[in-house]
Image 1 (cartoon, rainbow, N blue to C red):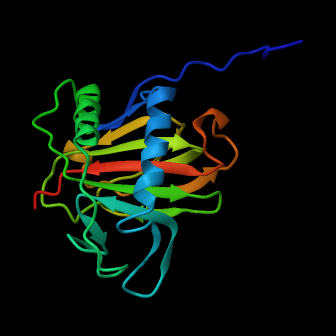
Image 2 (cartoon, one colour):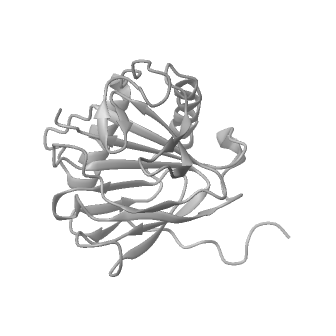
Image 3 (cartoon, helix red, strand yellow):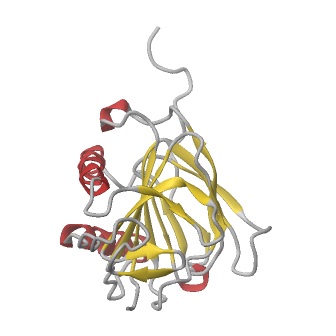
Length: 218
């Protein structure tokens, strides 16, 4: 007997908090494959993908490569002096346009969104991201998050602290999450990656890619 007795219920678009919008399945499988191929190229440099070392000596479990601006905890710079001293790769115009499309999808209008930086994070099955705010940008424009590969638990909290209240959202490959407005500085993190849930058709050997687009205001 083929198929499933009870097919999964369709996932619905949701406003998780004011200004925080989850759009399931926004990226087609073809667009996801294009992003996987692009991420492989970006990971090779000029500034290669790496585990970021924090000022206190801790090492992030995710691996990161940057476009447009290099994120050096906790600021943006043009050259990766903490890695190899190379100038960061430019943010491709097509990726910036994808970010504008994402904001239009979330809010109905792009509001003049002009992303100039992207952080690409790779999570293996053991990687996590602690609760944090994205505060290095001078602009209050939204953050766009695209998920590819393994699913994860995305914890979206409040603007006051790392604890409750928060909402856990399961992000699947192809999902879009945009947060801006009253939720722009909400704490958020990834407490768990659901290893082995990605579609082999993506051409990945496992893990989760998260592409986040930002407008730095710099």
